[in-house]
Image (cartoon, rainbow, N blue to C red; front, side, top):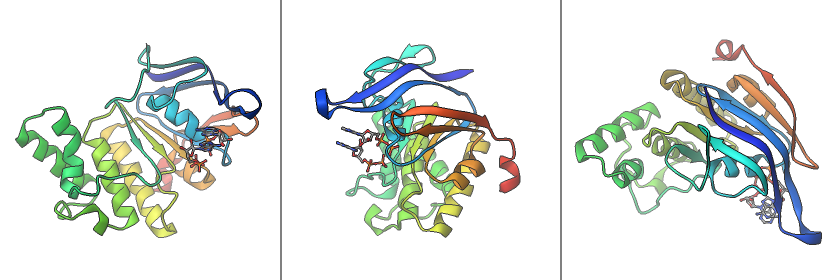
Length: 228
Ligand code: ADP
Ligand code: ADP
């Protein structure tokens, strides 16, 4: 089942002499259950593609569809995790994770249940009452992930989520996201410029190239499980 589809997507920032062609003719499908990694050098348009799918920015030409319907603005069905995700600093870890379910007016006992379940999923049980500024970088990214998971998204969009972490923490985070993807049958769209990361996580790798931001290659990876 195709969840997300882009058709002949172009994105041009600005106008005239200063314009930048960031995406050129992107045709991409994300199917339910896939772990798609987009690999490419800095500036090739990866973030632009993710933000278009997220609904944060509008494409210049072409279409971006979710289950056949045009994507118009962000919503809960597409959860986003950035490299340094902004947590609500005045809120505890718990409150950050409960924020989405509370916005959706779920009953209090269900909100608590969701929060406890997903903090456990990211190995942060017992940290619920901490302030987010007390946490390490890796822990913050795990809170950001739990906060997204708590909204039960159809697809999780991740933009270099482990890029700012040290090598050991990054390795732990890769195992964690792999396990979460597997256990929950999640669909993940994951941006990285790290070839090893893409090959160890992805079921499919999409390679982009600079000037202008095109997809130059796509291939399936079928040895994911042997690496973890
Ligand atoms: P990547 O994520 O692969 O590093 P980006 O999508 O961030 O690539 O950027 C693609 C190109 O578009 C780059 O040349 C970048 O400088 C440019 N760009 C990105 N965002 C903007 C913006 N808001 N305004 C103008 N140019 C932008
Ligand atoms: P990344 O390489 O991780 O995509 P960048 O450092 O290229 O991130 O960009 C960080 C932010 O700045 C992004 O939101 C991007 O859209 C924006 N940006 C990048 N290039 C430009 C630009 N030339 N003008 C305006 N905004 C830009």
